[in-house]
Image 1 (cartoon, one colour):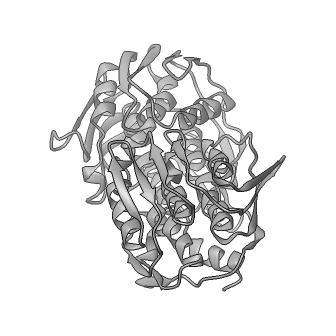
Image 2 (spheres, rainbow, N blue to C red):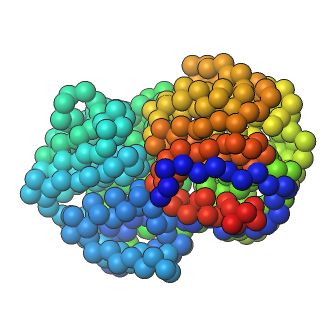
Amino acid sequence: MVAEIEIAPCGPITGSIRPPGSKSLTNRALIIAALAEGTSLLTGALESEDTEVMIDSLRRIGVKIDHDAAAHTLTVCGNGGTFAGDNMEMFIANSGTSMRFLTALATLGEGNFRLDGIARMRERPIGDLIVALQQLGAKIRTEHDNACPPVLVTASGLPGGRAKIAGNISSQYLSGLLMAAPYAQGTVELEVDGELVSQPYVRMTTHIMRDFGVDLEENDCRRFVIPGQQTYQARPYAIEPDASAASYFWGAAAVSGGKVTVAGLSRDALQGDVGFCDALAQMGCQVDYQADSITVTGQPLHGIEIDMGEISDTVQTLAAVALFATGPTKITGVAHNRHKETDRIGDLACELQKLGATVEELPDGMIITPGPLRPARIETYNDHRMAMSLALVGLRQPGVVILNPGCTSKTYPLFFEDLAKICGTS
């Protein structure tokens, strides 16, 4: 991939696109299918760095996975929850879902496992998940006793019991615990301590778990009871297009004053990030929901106040759109965004200011006041969402250059090609 890419301005965008499969759904389905009895066919699967590191790690514990990239399918022969590791190393790169999910999964096996990633992953917190797994009887710790990876697991099955899990850093902790819990030796009771961020992702997790045949009780994303010694049952499973990725194309319609249809998603999608369209509607866009598509038509935009705690992966997209609105936009409810691939509050504020905005950082968000736009070289901090979201500004403002565009390989390797196609600039 080239070292930088300059975005070509274009007129109002009109078109339709089906983004690649959901990363969140693909990695959850991979974990569950790997633990299942039998062979599952996952269709519409995502091909990206995040899914590749997940597949590599599952293969290391003996799961047979056949990947047909052309057909976007994964055939997964589950191990029924029985696997062993002899000083097994798993390299996770910077995939948060893979690190959190595989950490919980490793406690179900027999032997020694070490999970590590790139330098940024070694800065991303995992201590609350470690503590919760210890409460359930796991022998697990972080290598440097700093509540961040690398993670060391001495596994002999997960006993079960009761655990509290902090809800304010990442919902992925809870999702990892939930997916592993049916294979515990006894019942697992999980209680969320404090406010749970990104609740739709937890509902997504429990939905897939039930689809693969296990039972659990849940009380408003606050308390969960999962009987142990259950087994997931293999099945065909269709993966929706990625709603977070779709946000960039809906955002492109808003920024350009065009009309873009995203196929394969509906208001009833499993992914909470379709709620991004409601945010665009609040800003003035027209949104049309169909059974298998969502269309956004750009209209004059105005600033809004919005809690994005349930759609935090789309904060950067909304921030890009906010640069073209009349009046300030206030985003709250996303304090946990500082612990993502980069600090998605502080670093985002820095790049928005380069583009001419005035930005006030808040403990849990920011206030964006648009100013006269100007050319800028956008640092991406190796964060795929920084690259994709701020590229939208270049659809209207000449001279916007995205540095390290290859970082989009984490979840959307062909993003810039798809953007150029729908803009008619390829």
